[in-house]
Length: 496
Image: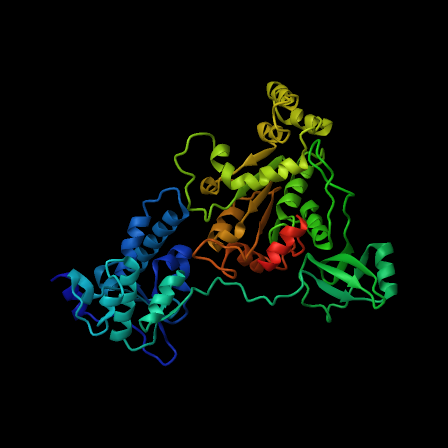
């Protein structure tokens, strides 16, 4: 008896109830969240055999996140579906739903004779895996009573499914709630006497009943009826404190950098506070995300009393799973195209005539051997070397590749992850869980500029992380809205 005959004689175990739905899972949903199987409550889950074929092709990607997730899905399915009977008939899940693998017998061997597929072969090329998954979902919809929904992270698959009469939706479990297009910070109304006391004492306690919605480490603007204002940070339990910032920050031998607007003051306060281990920052192009995070990181790393031994910088290459490639050169040379914005920032922070910085030299000499210190000193005096290259050569600033970060432990580093909106929630979790005691991680990006086809403005790792870490004592979130790069850049970001 072949598998198709066995499948026809054995009925798939599905729950048939008024509110129960049958969800058909696309490959990208399982790759996005391997544990999504347990997040559909008491509904029916169906995995087309074509999905297993795609996972089989992806599992060989040894160093990519997709390959690891594919292997993780295989292990889960092996535990849940231990034999051929459970594979064909399905199993009950602890959530109260069912899990089944379906074979659409009507498209096996090139057959196109199903009533459910009548005319579909003329519309969709069934030699393509995506279209075969849609056809399998149509088969499930035609063969079983509960309402059938195809779940896919691929917008085009969703559209094609709807075009052929099949309901389809995105995987919604890890989407952050929709945020109103509100101001970057809240305004708290106080009296002029309260703001005077706050200015002199540096601390102020508000009525928690009126402001119970405030999160820990949320930045606010105190405002009186007379128009006087003062920035503050909510430390929790209704306690507000003044921002204590240095006059400026700078890289060794670089130019002083000062915050240009209130939002940048908020961001700098979080960057310079060692009690905050995680910062998420949204901001459109030109708001100062890269420049401020870089200069504050280097400023702290070279400080004699700093807890950080250096700065690690990386940038999403449209997902952790993308390989650097078999290109010649060092890791830094391979990452250069992706990290050019940071080289641009360093060029601004440290001009060509940058002198040696005694504090930087002292720390380098303490950390490195005598020979290495002499090498750094030589680099500082080399007129043909860009001033910021001494930071790279000495190890104070390091370039990290996300595809090699799994399994690492990163102690005492100031870690900057740019373009975090391109990552999935699971990829962001992979990065953050590498951060050891004494380290700090800053995730920056623009949720409105996403190139990854499998995440959007609500399901990307940056927004997901900011939402889930809200109100934690060691986490802070800042939103930058005012562009400072140039008037032209600000107009382009707003109008084009």
